[in-house]
Image (cartoon, rainbow, N blue to C red; front, side, top):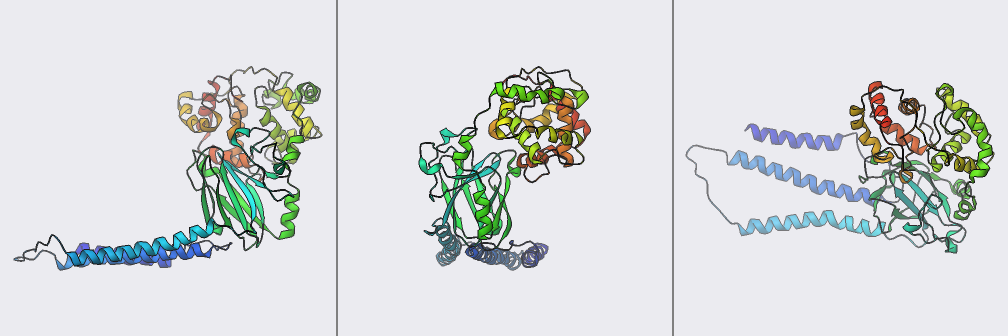
Length: 456
């Protein structure tokens, strides 16, 4: 009898939790109310089955409980019962699957007037591409992906020259306009999901999947990867910003075209050497760094990373926090570089400087730090060599006092808090795994033991 009472209480509490729960769907912001209807149908079907099955179990336990002198009947087959169970089960399964199949067909069949864009996923960030004035997206090929061509756009295809490129995690869309999203992955399986839009679709390497929706209200909505895509999967976050049409067009017009990005000349080390004279006063003639001036080592860092950080300092993305006095010192120095060409030239020159690691200054348990570094190495490389594809700079050979300070800055929100620093935001989340000062010292001590050669 106790089991019967427990089952009945379990069913009642489950129903109360469902109907009284404060956790429910986010307010819908697109045309896909049919998704909610499909989910609700599934809830009703499974809920009724849950109540009936548990009710039957409770009834059977009570009715056929042990009674002295009562003998059980043996009935190996019951054709009538089997027909009823098979029929009811088939109806229930059909009731759940049919609405989902209809919704699926709708969501992958966009209207002819839908605006076509591309969402590109990779570990662990998003990028987006809009057609230019010709209304067509250019051809792409994964084999063409490079630092200068992160989308892999075919330069021989004229339709791709005016494509608008957004290399950030936030994308803007116009309100009340159907949008067809082409989904492409550069590495592993990802997933494009906007909960408020009720859309979710996998990005499968080697193929292009698609979905469509119509934003129905302005605002900023979460863009998530809902497919486990690696250790930093939880940091792969972005936003879809829905604007009024005029605001969207203004934003889109400000985005660079593929042709614009190809016109930026590669840096020249010879030209950068003269500009580096200002940098050398703190960072050293050979980019060796200077702890007394709080200037980290530059030699050995990837050219792409140097360019990004200089651009961040110039734009106020880095070095604007009042708790980052050394970053504030660097910001006006970066402003000396007048334009992108100057930044490219300096970065090209720094890339020629030899990497000569200095002596360790941080004392820690390198063996313990190796365990912590397993997470770091997923992006930064097993030997701390860095990885451009994952936007992870070189750690091996960098001065340990600087590494410790940056980890602390990420943990405390001094660095990585600016909304435009998408990779800093990711690093802030990862740095929190180091719970105390001892853990930071240990992982830095282990990085000190890594060989600085190779990598990017």
